[in-house]
Amino acid sequence: MSEAVLSLDGLTVRLPRGADRPHALSDVSLSVASNEILCVVGESGSGKSMMANAIMRLLPNEVTIERGRMMFEGRDLCAADGAAMREVRGAGIAMIFQEPMTALNPLRTIGDQIGEMFAIHTGLSKAEINARVLALLEDVRISDPKAAAKAYPHELSGGQRQRAMIAMALALDPKLLIADEPTTALDVTTQAQILKLIRDLQQRKKTAVLFITHDFGVVAEIADRVVVMQHGAIVEQGAADTVLNDPQHPYTRQLIAAVPPLTTPPPRILSGKTILTIDGVSKTYRTGGFLGRGARITEAVKNVSLRLPRGATLGIVGESGSGKSTLARCIVRLIDPDAGSIVLAGKDWAKLGRDEIRRETRHIQMVFQDPFASLNPRRKATELVAQGPIVHGTGRATAIAEARKLFELVGLDPSAGDRFPHEFSGGQRQRIGLARALALRPDVLVADEPVSALDVSVQAQVLRLLAELRQQLGLSIIFITHDLRVAAQICDLIAVMKDGAVVEQGMTAEVFGRPQHPYTQALLSAIPGGDFTRKRDALIA
Image 1 (spheres, rainbow, N blue to C red):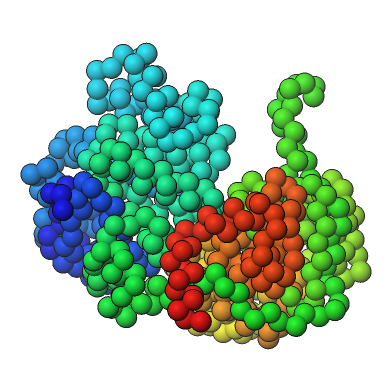
Image 2: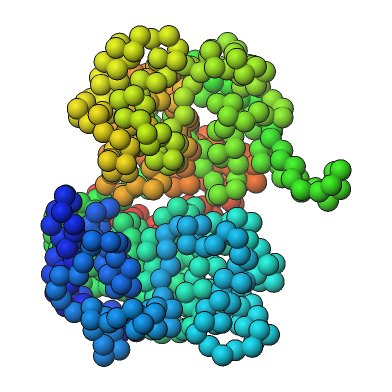
């Protein structure tokens, strides 16, 4: 084994008073070498990201390193001052963040932001910097480096932004690359591309990689060694094959078991009655141009026709940009379709006026990907859930009482309703979002990526909850996701979307077991850790 690039020895990080535990990290010891990718795995709150921030010395206020050592190139980073850390960051250790949109400056071009690394740390001329920027963008497999360099962050796709972040991180040839959940919000094919890219770059440049994730599917795809963290402590570590195939700690076994299987459960008997009929729905966006000249036309949804049987779950899958979320927003009339019909409860929702939609909205409700963004931070959870019924004429006292019952239904303590959204975890906020959607007792629930940002174990809990609610309440669900493993577990029917059109649809077991369209086949083959998951599923079966 190569010499360690970074070694942590007994690292302990103290949290401020009032936190849920005294320490974010407790006696953490690990090392990462130049020829390896070390995956750090654990749920939210396990201390993974806090460890990355401690290494970079970017800890929040009042969070302090209490004891331990962080040895990098012969120096203890725990004792390094601000000037020394500025030298280390970028040139010695670089970091890729989970959400590039929050890390990139929206007012500066991609090329300008990458070039800044060279401007600060080197004496290169402007022409040399521009050449380096283009070479880096080519290195990370961006198809048109010149166009990407001139683009602003919002003009790139999620995968392109993540590639730009990787290019920025690699600009100064760091000895260590820290990747903090860099693929969590990406679709399966983009995930596969980013993972391959990191692996290729690591092998080519011999960069040590500390890869933080909550998904053992990703671990199976990329890791050489694994460290498993729980509540700020390391509970298991070893070679990837050993940890994946012979986990010793119960928590490790729990995380591996929470990775959704690729095999579908036995099909349910579906109702012969259709609750929602979508026929020929289309939506086109026109942007830019003057008096119609040079306008960019995007056919987001093209002539989509689907049927949702009563009590069934219809999964809509595809890459980012395939039209899934646009279709969902057309169905609930958050945006207006250009053509087609959406028939629910005997009415064509595509033709309803705004006042009618508000009156009929109890029939269909939506759960969003990011519940934190969709919940008013100034209102208590109970009020958020009761708001819909109150608007529709239910008395305040009755609506509040019903909201507390819904809290129980979605697995939350009714007393927690007096707290504000920021006081809940991600999984709990998603449950509040579900309770709010259920408050009007809808016939159809549209769930847009409701578990994509959650840990695998929390994800599993929310999926179980949705299945139980479907059974108890007779809900019909449209479930939008880019995660085919999730779709396999919860969906009765699948529609695969590409470039705004449905390219394949049918029973889930049929579509996933015998995919006909090349695009469906490509999606299934791109699932991170697919081979590991299939072997595990075969052993369980």
